Length: 183
Image (cartoon, rainbow, N blue to C red; front, side, top):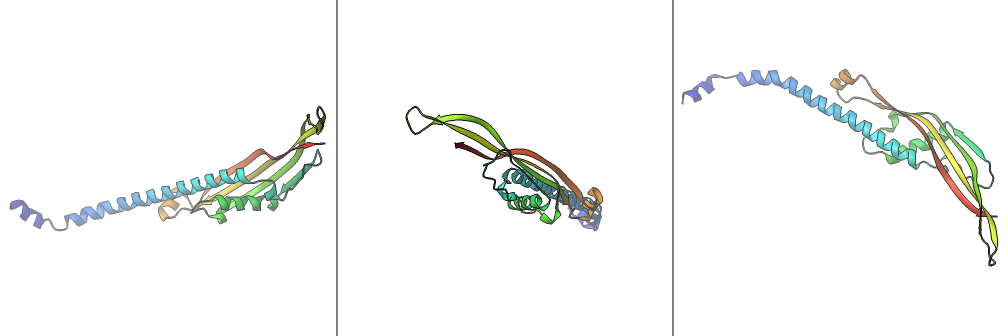
C-alpha cells in the first residue's frame, strides 16, 4: 500500500520524461521518413532509367530505315531523342516518380547500317543456289539524365540540403534491326 501512495505523490514526473524524450523520438521518426523517401526516389529513378534505356528503339526516334542501302547513316539529337526517352521513363516509372524533376541533356542517337556477310541459300530449282546478304542497323544512344530529389521535411533539408541530384550517363550500343535478304 505504501508504494501506491508513493506513486500518487509523483505527479508530473511522466510529463518531464515525455518532454525530454519526445523531441528525440520525433527527430528519429522524421529522419527515417526522409531517408526512406530519398532511397525510394533513387530506386524509382534507377528502375525507370534501366527499363527505358532498353526499350527505346529506332522507331521511337522516327527512324524507319528499310535497310535497303549500305552504308547508311542517320544522326538524331536534341528533342528528337530526349522527348521519346522521357516518355519511356514516364511509362516505366512507379508511383512517386516526378517527371518534372527530370532533365535530359546531350541526347544523341546515331544509326548506321552494316552489311555483315554474304551467303548462299537454296534456290527454287534442285541444286540451285541464290546469293543472300545480311544487313544490320546499329543504334548508338548517348544522353545525360539528371533527377532532382527534394527532401520532404525541414530535417531532410538540414541533412541533405535543398535538393539531391542523381545523375546517370547513358551510353549504349544495340542492334535496331536486322535483315536477311536474297538477291
